[in-house]
Amino acid sequence: MKNFINISDHSSNDLRAIIDEAKARKLKRQNLNKSSPDEDKPFEGKSMAMIFEKPSTRTRMSFDIAVKQLGGTSIILNPDGIHYGKGDETLKDTAKVLTEYVDIVMLRTSSHKNLEEFGKHLDIPIINGLSDVGHPCQIMSDILTYEESNGAIEGKTISWLGDGNNNMSNSLIEAAGKFGFNLKIACPKKYSPNKKILSWAKKNKVNLTVTTNPEEAVKNSDCVMTDKWVSMNDKVNKKAKKKILKPFQVNKKLMGKANSEAIFMHCLPVGRGEEVTDEVIDGKQSVVWRQALNRVHAQKSIIKWCLD
Image (cartoon, rainbow, N blue to C red; front, top):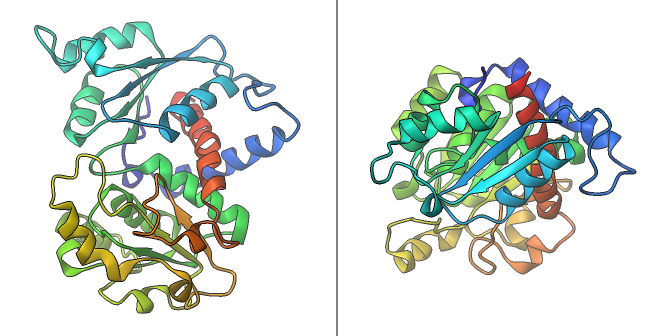
């Protein structure tokens, strides 16, 4: 049984195989309707339970469509409508029940500990649809998107601007180690990557630069990435955080410091006029809508890999 919780859990070869499978399946679907199943229907007769502790648009839609394209069915569960560690039923008991009903579980949670606890008691695979620690499915789809635009990501330079201590930046650092790209993070000192992920990066010889200078981070970059300055359930003074992060906004002037063929990525939802200007996100260098689509294809490959 194989779970997909953190990018760092897996070998570079396995992660590359997932990306290559996603590319191949996407190519074969060119003449199919959006919800038509793949010809081989590898998930036929199987089902996935999806649990959402947090609101979701892209994760909910992309996983549901991914399962349909693989030939299977999905069941969406709201923690408020089920026994999910509430009353007399523990997370362990809920996990044991789901093991009897479905073939795989996807959990989108505010607490990475819930993900680990739930997965510990499942006898079927679990996928991290997002947690406060990581967003591995999003980063896998980002790598797929990058390689569709600019070729192999190994040896390329990716820049991250904004909060350097969130789930996206954590998974991006792990991906830099596994896929062999250079990563430059520009963030205020207050929002630098945490010591645990920096220790992992050092141990795994990740080519990582952390700076407080946005222009230094994007210089000669092949891809510029950012995220919402205030995430869901981010218990901070929002006005104060946005003020600190304002110098890290991605705008046309900053994108001009990157390579001429550089692309812009954002995992969405977007704070227009905050972490990025309309001119950039709606501009020719932006690939954010393809990123959203590629969640479907990357996640199909992850589901298949977990069950193979």
